[in-house]
Image (cartoon, rainbow, N blue to C red; front, side, top):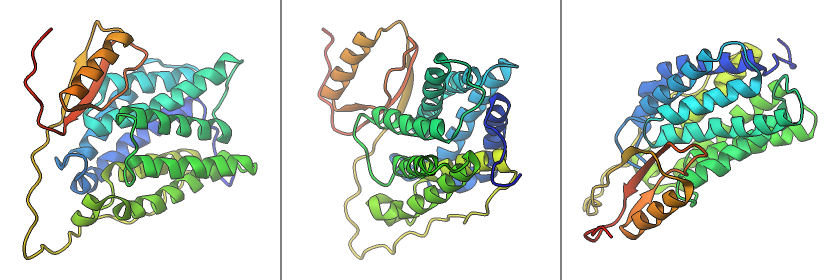
Length: 295
């Protein structure tokens, strides 16, 4: 298709979601094997796949629609069908696209997403993902990879390059950031892996490149290469648990009160309440919580 590529209109956005689902199926085992943070439960690939399937199902259900409407459907489907921490993060990335396209469409007809809008959408995704992690960014996670992709698209948009060129640059920058994640997070270095969520994001970005240009880049297959065990192994950390639940019938103020109370109990809330009243969140107990007594 050359350097110009296909427009990222409603049809292309839906096609991208189809390709993401297909490519995540291809890479699910690889991504699962890389999963050691925040909980080593080998399900990052599966959770990203199931979340994207839910997003795609809602996008397919809207039929012929504007690009902003398809983006909103992807976001809503991912939010309602998010699996695990990685699924929540995927839903926030899709929400970033939905938020930016909705704002652009409010100013008039929006036929397609260009490089400027995509950069804004990815940066919005960075903000939302950090908020979903409790407001504190952990270097060496999917956020680091997403930041690199957003910066690459922004740079291309600033120099007038096409969307296809920007997406190509985003995928390549994401790979560079991905391969640096073990240098940023000790648990990854110890396990000899790159970040699993970051690897999944590279799959999503490469799927977008494939959608726009018809070309899928060849990437390395990442396999765990753990460090040799020490003669005296350090004490194993206390077990952690990740729990996901739906909270309904609760407004934003009440959700904030719940978040504060959980923090007092040593429980970290892992997703930001969305604009909808149905709230999906995950949290990981990180300390020994004192007994809780209802008010």
